[in-house]
Length: 170
Image (tube, rainbow, N blue to C red):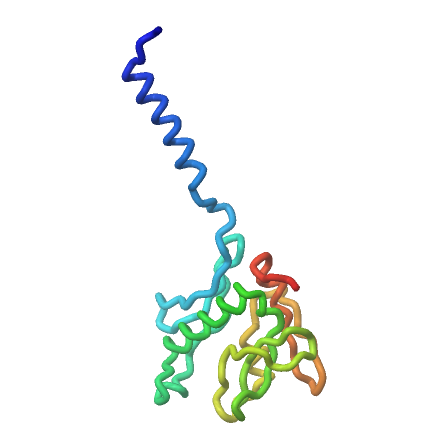
């Protein structure tokens, strides 16, 4: 029987260890899409990182209207970014539209075109035009698809295509 050398044993251990480590390494080719509140500028921004790793600004937080109620722009950015992340992860972020919740105008999710308000995204200031706010909110870069107009002239923005593979299509 041939004696086992320390060099061969170490080399074999290294190869096994390297193989095991490589299997558990995360793939950076397709990062998990997500929403987060970007705070490095002078105004917080709700940002979406798509499946290619490209950051897309969605909402710029400039209003201090809700500050007295404890919702300054940073707090609203964090809350809404978190909501959008949850809706995206659960596959319920399909259409974005306007509606009324608790007697206030809101931007909300809808399950389908012409569907009712399902989940709150953000509350609007009193007197703020919901349709114009929605159009401004999703005024992405050139080439963005226009919204579909539903019953009573309410826009429905289909965000599923924008979110790519992160939306659970049902």
